[in-house]
Image (cartoon, rainbow, N blue to C red; front, side):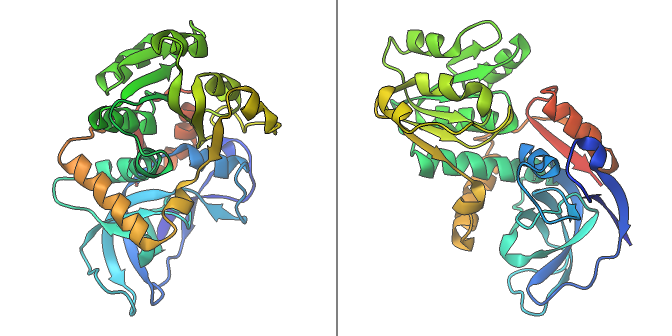
Length: 324
């Protein structure tokens, strides 16, 4: 018998329920995994609220670390006792034990503990595809990272700094500004006190940035566009403040023949070879401490609803882990 967080309706954190569940034997292509640590990501809130629709009832959670307890008959390359990390889909990582298709499972190398793997793989894979595939960042370029003190933001700023880019980050408090500077930002803008688009153009001497990475959504959309140089790219990859409203494509022409994309980790890791390549890059960066991860909050898995309240209220920094 295992326990898990489930929802039978969408809404606020109060729709989350701590339930007992039977976990069947794994199917031929599955691994049975006992989770040791579970990562919290903003996409979990989108699933819970209904912004990203799931068939109900449903579990929640997109990433976890754990130990293999049983191996399906068609699975190769894994054995009982392996330390592994899982990346959804399918959702359902908020569980003590779960079965997972082996195609969405990777081994955790020595030098990376379970909490770091659980908190860092999903966010790290997001940072990897954004920086290396959506817009391959190169030395000498200038980028803007919205929510630079968040979990993905901290990884992105460190990695982009390492690649030789000039990194501008936005944050919502002086405490988060100090954290963003520690994690690789060359310039930090507190959007509570400054117009971040105006300040970005001051920093870049009127040129604008090459690319904006925006996980905030509605509240920062037009401001992010205004930060770009002509023919720059805005990468939207989240909706923390709500989804971006429909807009006329002529807006992109009027602001300088801009490019816009709405990116998703699911598409960038749909093929197992892409998942493995990205995961290897992320886990090696964590093992070598090229990218440092701050796990600033931990909650018991049964307290997942409070974790959702805190992340939505922007009370968290860095990464958050749920412990079964």
